[in-house]
Image (cartoon, rainbow, N blue to C red; front, side, top):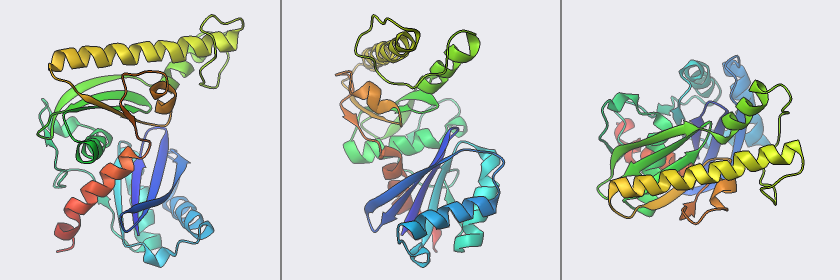
Length: 259
């Protein structure tokens, strides 16, 4: 079995592959203070609860945008599973050519999503990840990552609204039936969700116009389904795109890393 791990700013998502099949996944809240033992116990407990023998785990691949967590998480994998994890970074083959000003500045999550989208659905494509930040990335038909745009995520937008305005409460992010709302909570939900739909459609349209060719639009991310269900600009919503990208990159590197 393979663990495919995405360490993000808000959550750590972990997928379990058996052969080429994603058989399960789970999610942890990202916290800088957790120790390697805490991570090890959490992962072991999840696997035991689902009757996955830990001795069948043979490799771990990790994409991380939170460097402060990498040491303790990596230590947990080594201590509890006796595996040295593979981190997405320099020296790792991804199949994606990075054509931006500072290639080393590209987040591992964006590179993984690019690989998942390109090798699963083909190019050229526009990959949208509705995460802590929302990223819009363009990959050419030759597998070249040529750049994109970054916006505040839906959760950040909602949190900013409630934290910066004294009389506005924290809310659940969901789409109300009507845009013209009759109470504070539904009016906030309407402004955030419908406003985000408008932003998404506008950015997609502008990127397509600037690129000059038709792009297949592929989206992912926890809150992305709310947006994808409300617009015809998104062709595919794939909640497991990051896991697919991690598995694709692992397959490109496993033989080289074991030599």
